Image (cartoon, rainbow, N blue to C red; front, side, top):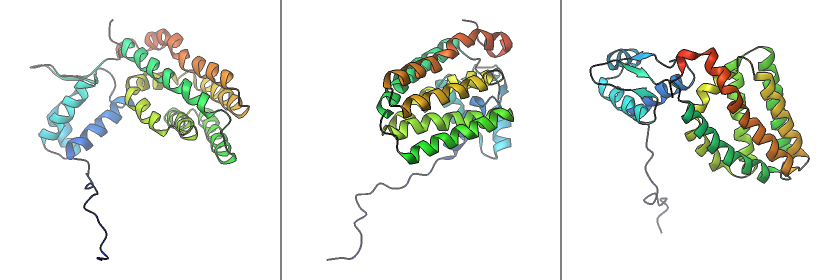
Length: 231
């Protein structure tokens, strides 16, 4: 018998293509508002800045347009799409449906290790609020919700949430100018309900938490009118 391992059944490692890397970088900058709604982009400029040829940039532009993040119009400048309130509310609906089930599944199954990790995350959120570090708070917010998926043994749900929430993220970042403390307090309430094993309470807190944006959207839009599409 050969001592060589049987690798024939394994799939080869696929490395991200240049187009994938360009897409990921532009997607990140759009979601994080580094490239704000309405910003103009050109294949030539992006290819120069990123040090790549125009073809992968063209491919990335097309993928972003299919996701609703770029407007590509013949003979006119390509622009970052304005925020669609409809797209934001649809993403919130999907996220609520998943995360309500996540918190119900998490109740009663939180180990001491997870308890510590959640409390550590809350402490870091508090520090970010105190320093008004909105980007860091946004990252910690995402990490908090990902933890809920992991500790409930539904890690796959976070991938689905990530894929659907990009339009929502632009509005979430804008909302952090006034609601970081509210969000932190809601996270604390969620953890308290989870540790008590109160599934109904955790569900209500999650619904309230994710529905707040619905009530804040008009304020966010009035404070950033140039970022939003007319609908």
